[in-house]
Amino acid sequence: MPPAPEPSPAHRGPRAILDRYRRAMLDKSADRLADLYAGDAVHEFPFRFPGLPARYQGREEVRAGYRALWGASPVRPEHIHETAVHESTDPEVITVEQTVTGTLTTTGEPFEVPGLLVIRVHEGLITHVRDYMDGLAVARMRGGPPVR
Image 1 (cartoon, rainbow, N blue to C red):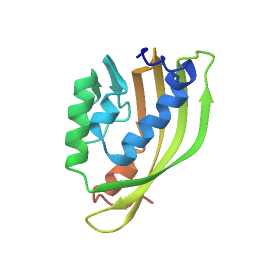
Image 2: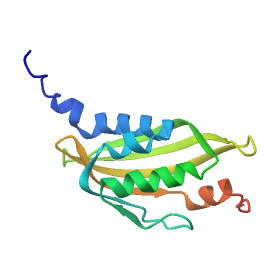
Image 3: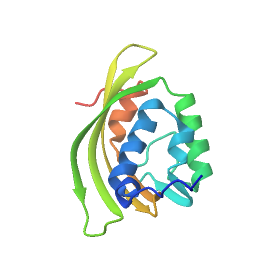
Image 4: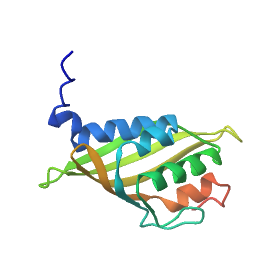
């Protein structure tokens, strides 16, 4: 039997990886998410808030970090609403404006977290992510005071 054909560049580019990234996020699958990353990838959280590190260094830190984060979280993401996708002059980079919505399983309350992702994909794997989430929205999800 001949070997399976290599995925086309379109199936390995940033847009295709973004679609798989979102599916893993909605399913809260740390394994499927981490498998999208290169072994030495970096996932950064420039907007800091309690309970989240500044970065995950490497695929296995992404896997362990998201597994712990999602395992302890009452968040059930249900939709990712894409506001805009900005293609870059660099074919490996995509910038995404989006809002994640869902339900807190402990209270049944809805939540929404706006964010921006800058994703670099090289040879079909994520090599770098800058993940800008609305920290106040995350704090509200965790039972913090509403912001007016």
